[in-house]
Image 1 (cartoon, rainbow, N blue to C red):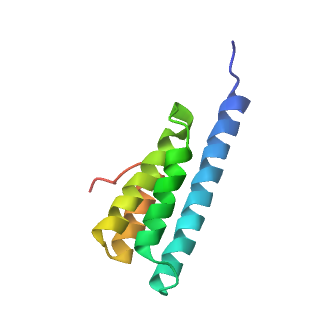
Image 2 (spheres, rainbow, N blue to C red):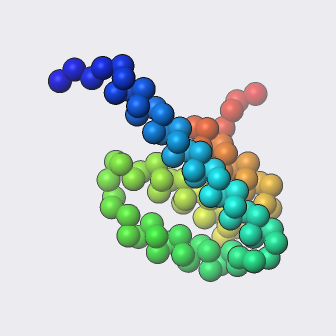
Length: 98
């Protein structure tokens, strides 16, 4: 089946839209953690439950990887700045080499 450039463009736009939503959501969560409104341990438990209900498919792989990496930082007690940096590295597609 032919996949036109309009289909690829729509897929790219949808991915960028989703990345923007992930970034905005995580930024909000980081703000709540920074203000002491959200407990890291309870947040980790919440996301563990959320991930456990996601189907293990190729469609959810990216989301599961982003959340798993971010949860690792929560559990390790990483500084908010490091957590934010990691989150944006994942969203942008990996660490940028210098």
